[in-house]
Image (cartoon, one colour):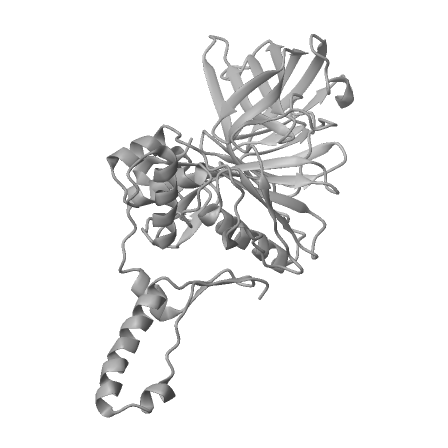
Length: 442
């Protein structure tokens, strides 16, 4: 076990009680039961190896105390302002009461440690921030499980703009990368070659494409058709384009309906250009983007005539795509989550990262990144919890990001998780079994 976080526990020795008379044994015996019960209600032990909670009696007793939404919201707001209310569990304990008192004193409110409408209004307006350094035990680095895992905290602007300043802005894809879109479908990377990437979508379709995503797919297959295409330009010619640059090329495609022999040939002229860079908001966050627009003529029946990609160098993929048909009708998809699979990792490292993400989403302060690393892999990550919000169905959700640093290529993996009370776990809509639908957070 690499780290253990426990609350204080009081032990009462039976031998000491045996030294007293029968009456005292009965009295102290009752007290012991009472003290032990109260203590275990607030006692959780987290194992760095498994991330599970130990103490059956404590867990059972704790469930009898129902979390309060107002208390939890107060805890979140207090933490955002730099106070230390403990985990946002909706329970009004000593730590939360002390944080309330500190805030009330700083805000000029009556110092009573109670949650009321006046306090919530002051917190909601972004009252006085606690500026002094955190000196209590909660400021100590949290450790994550996995071989020689370690963690430390530092401030990260997760709710600010993800910059485009990521050096080489070429698209990067790894085996298993899963992109969740606002449309509800998920695109997953199946294979990665020197120039090509094989994709599979949750709707059963698939295609092989260049890393330069604005180019037409080399091969594709849907539920009813399959096809191939050729272009008369080398992929590097289109990426990266400079602002104002435009390129024109010919595309020859062949397609046929499945179980039919007739082949349909289409010849198109494509024109692609890079426009001005733009900062946009999508469910996954706010990003500086490179804007690439392509149009084609003639337009295949029922397909798009013009497409606009908003490529985020921080993510190394586009985070929004707008498609316009011949009548100008627009269809837009926006990035909700990106989760890496890292299938070549040892199981212990994958389990360790999952534990660290769960722990950070539950206890982490907004924008306070927790550095995670393991001797089992070379990847170094910063887990940064972000804004909490209520999705549809009263689901409590939270944005977060995994920020990858050297020796791997710098990259951001933004995502949204929602709390599942039945499983006592944060789940990513669209990816995890039993998670909330994507519509709950988009």
